[in-house]
Length: 411
Image 1 (cartoon, rainbow, N blue to C red):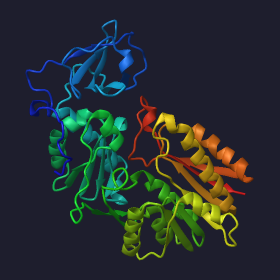
Image 2 (image 1 turned 60 degrees about the horizontal axis):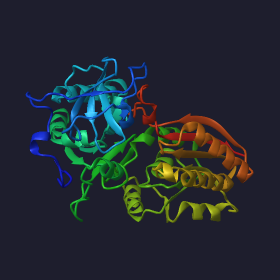
Image 3 (image 1 turned 45 degrees about the vertical axis):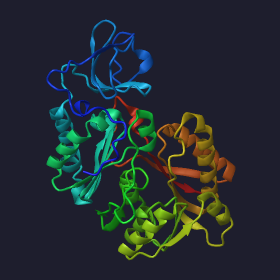
Image 4 (image 1 turned 60 degrees about the vertical axis):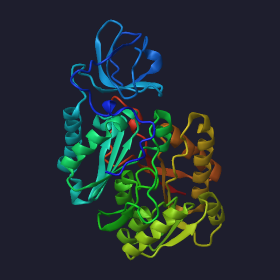
């Protein structure tokens, strides 16, 4: 397994599930147990914390009246002090527990969704949606990219890796903590391999072949847009398409090869992403015009084009990362959608997305309404979607629903 540098990791004695002699600490809440079963319990909700408690320790949580709330992992550096893994306070969070949750997650993808019919790549674990809050795992053909969002799973990375090797024999593994979570949780940050030693995978989605490098954004590829790509390709035949913030080109290539679009332009400011997009273009024998430019500048120049775009896709990076920058993110979403609407031919299709979990769908829709007003256009929504079905959302944790994808026509 390829891992990040160890840095200031705990002693080896703390890098696996609890040894037989381990006594699980009990934490008491200030209030009584409620019907709300949210898996995140914030620091302010506890009476106190016993001395010697370490990041990633397994804990039992009790309400102030002694009623058990559940068992989870403690995080000393986060405002989310405990992530509950199970309501059963007696259930040990050991290797058997991890294996059971992973097998249930895999059954959804293989037995229920039957993703192997259309792809060799999917999200294996989607945090709270699979009962493993603080953990994301993506499978790209024979490469597993493991993202521990919490120190608990960083501590258990060897145990987790061994279980994944049993479930996916022969698959390569790389651990890539998200940079923001790594700093918050004290996890050593991911260090990309040296030049010439990069890990890559070639994946298949429908009839496309695409290259994935985990050193890119998130886990290296946007699996969450799979179903939105499939929907979009049914609408682009013979049309002029702009893929704004195209990243490594999956949406562009889908429009051109599967959707038979007349012309496709992919725009992105990330030179490395565009370099990969060009490799993907060649792999699929597609013909796409790639533009290295800021999407705002590009759209401003398209407002009075003689031959305007008939389909525009806007899928920007996560702009609303921190609460103190939320207003700035709102302005960016407003401006880019206003410009996109102005650049579309009357009756044209706009697919506009936001992957910012902090931005609720209702708020995003209000931004789009405002963008239509400012652009002097009428935006008529005909479909609203989210992440692909291998990104399940727990009813107890609606925050795990993050992606908004809105399809509409502009007049």
